[in-house]
Image 1: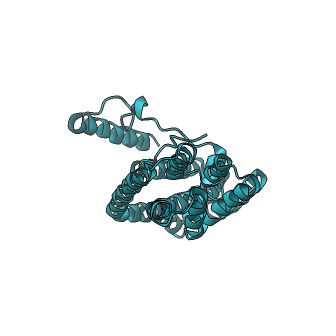
Image 2: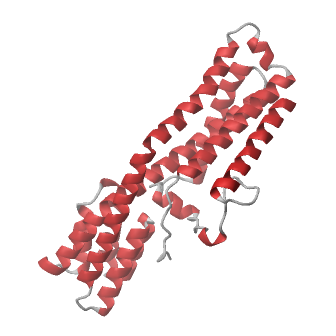
Length: 294
């Protein structure tokens, strides 16, 4: 165990020396941190809305986490036959529902990011060339948008039919989509609806071009990261495969039940989780703040 700690400390020291000499990083953290670049974190309601989980109750979410914890604990107990790895396996499995919902949220945001440039352009054409009113053009564009976005536009249309209040209608749409581009588009439409004028065509054209540039940048970055993301998932399976193979060699299973064996397994699982989390943060693309969030 002492050798393991010394190896970890030596590796981290080499990392600090390398980043200090070649990258100019300072401090003892794994990467530099600038308070000025700190992003606004979405609230729990925004997070659930972006994941499309309006109808999921908190109790159901807790039940899913508890079920995965129990399943992971039972599998770890069957493999290692000890308490500490059982708890670590349960905690690791309990993170699966959270990871699945995070992936669902990322997929929905990616679909919305890809769709908004076309939707904004259609909105511009309907309001300028075809002569549709702003509410009518908005609902027509939403009806032909991606499947995951249509329920939000339908709810906004119901609000408009009940109240004919365009501000409240846009508020419903912003709340259900919780998307930065939706906020900017709704704010542009609201100002045009209240003040009038002919500048909306140019504003929507500029917004659509900005969104197209952002989508092209993100697609290029994702294409460059595809190989790294595959390697990240593949490397996760290697230690688990080696641990499973060790169970079948000699007295490998009994070695896991000793105090040192349990501590080694727990340390290995903790390092795997930390490296997985760290790699995920390094591969994460910057998210856009909701400037017009209410």
